[in-house]
Length: 120
Image (cartoon, rainbow, N blue to C red):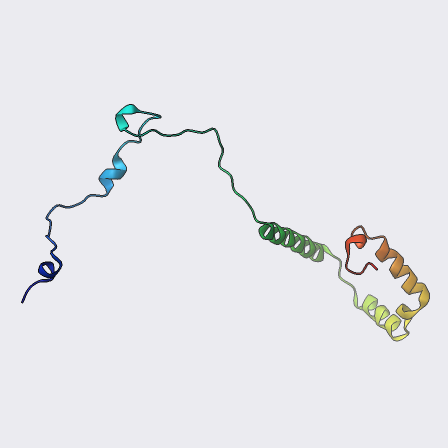
């Protein structure tokens, strides 16, 4: 029975290839004629480009962190304050025209209101 080397016409070599020898060679100096290669040196700096999607995601992440920090630092309501709010809701305090006008005025005064989807 013939071996695979005979079918493929491959001659086995006893020479061991050491790939690290290539890595140990010193880098040629700038335009060193003995290296046989010319190296083009430029004054350009490395640059990275960040896509618009990545910028938007970073912006959203920063906004989310800011809001989370605000919530963590925010005050909690006492049970008494919660009961007062429940009473106002039951009495339809927030449905009155004066309260609605106050809420709308405060919303319009927000810095990003002009860019909001609620602007008419």
